[in-house]
Image (cartoon, rainbow, N blue to C red; front, top):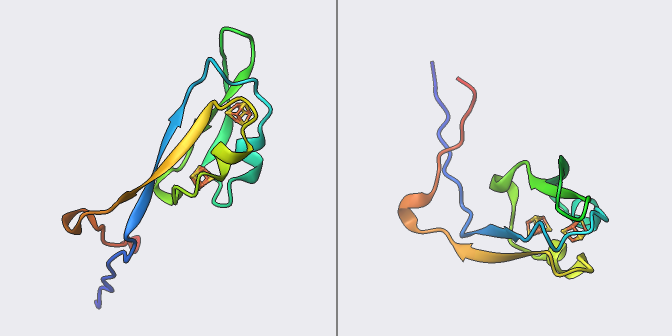
Amino acid sequence: MAVERRTSRRKSRGELFIDCERCKGCGFCVEFCPTQVLAMGEKLNRKGYHTPVIVDLEVCTGCDLCGLYCPDFAIHAVRVKIEAGEAKECDNGG
Ligand code: SF4
Ligand code: SF4
């Protein structure tokens, strides 16, 4: 059986920083993320707001749109370079 092997050509990925205690639960970061990295979580912070959780960091590009839309400076992202050895082969599901 032929096995297709592909290697990711991504040169960068996102790294996310969330300060849950600053968050007021508006959900803008979830709404405006173009790749659906985030969702609103179940837990409440000390102020009683639901805060975002990361559901799929793999698809985060580090564009920082979430940070730009956050009115409370509670989230931001940076773009980090993927080193050569870090590139992953696609999982073709078997
Ligand atoms: S940096 Fe961009 S892709 Fe990553 S969570 Fe924020 S909006 Fe989404
Ligand atoms: S945009 Fe900021 S304040 Fe609104 S849910 Fe996201 S992290 Fe919280």
